[in-house]
Image (cartoon, rainbow, N blue to C red; front, side, top):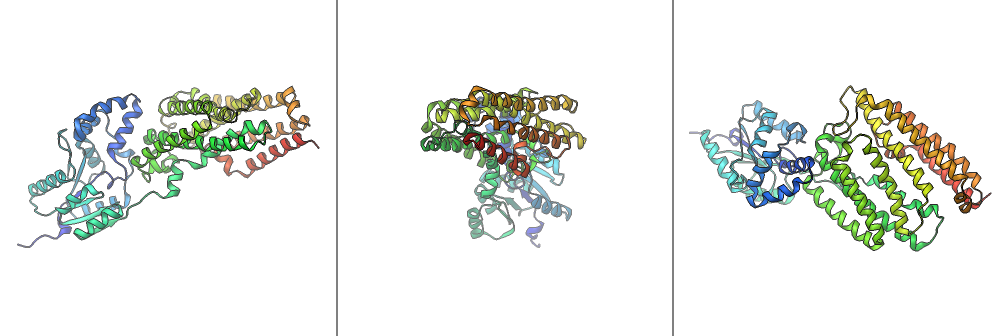
Length: 484
């Protein structure tokens, strides 16, 4: 009797890290935490049940939707072609069987599934190999092929007639090739430095430049204070990047259906959850170590910022109006943090201008998101508390807040504080129409749908007019300081 070719053997396909670059266990953890932060304690209570028991308890609570997961499209295309030529495909994973079945139903080309199901035995390594071998014999095959990705799959490959490596790290791939031929290889895609920097949103560190404002407003050139505020800037940047990772981890389902946010590294699967979590924890640890060096008042402010940001990511961003007030507060806290880092008295005028200006910009962002939804005839972004009919009210509130910021600036120019700091304070009147023009232009572009749902500060960083406005404002401030 002729032995069947390995290409004709049933192909057993791994799920986590192979079919999807993500991990359904990690996705489930994030979904469960998204429901309520207190679920972390429940999961800790499940740990004594072992890995299989933990997976079963978690799957009882949440099951990720396949439509919201990233997939290895090149590998999916290969599987479709194999199915089209009549090959038997079975999805075999250590994930809970209910998750595996839902994924198989989503694709439609798997004839059966194997998964962890009894809460006692985790279907990984030797357990998976034995389950696959038994399943293949039941189908009438003594030989079978396996597609996997990790070191845990090496014992499974050892029992296979054909090895397919998908997204396999170089070290594992070398070990596999030393033991047996590899029929097909789908390259391993490690996140590049550029991708990691995108994940932590390094560009958003520009917002932390607000930390320097109190020292600039005080006209201080003390090198010691500038050294402290630079360290504070780095600490704030690391902390903010860590909270951005938390926000993206908790918002994965919503980001993956968003036109722009689906391209973020975590949403696209180019950075895995298992990479993001330790990276975020490491940045938080370094941030607070630097903060303690700067001083305890600054550390307390950084802790307050972190708490409010995490609250925003987990729940408060879903509360209409409260979310934009909180965003404006978070921007203003950066200014307060700069004052605490340098022990400079914080001007109430600066705080008032900031809160109104940043409230206006927060409302710009919400209006841009809603207008994009209206243009595309889609529902508003999931996880937000706004509807398209809120647009007129939000526009009115946003423009009013921007104008209020300019009005406070005008009042400041004629105040004793201004006359004490500037030789020619009347020159500052030129700054009011410049700021007013910039605010009106941002709102005009929002109404014309030219922000495309983008953060207004991110837009400003790419906008030559905004840079020109900043340069003019700095020039006016210098002229008023030194006099003509």
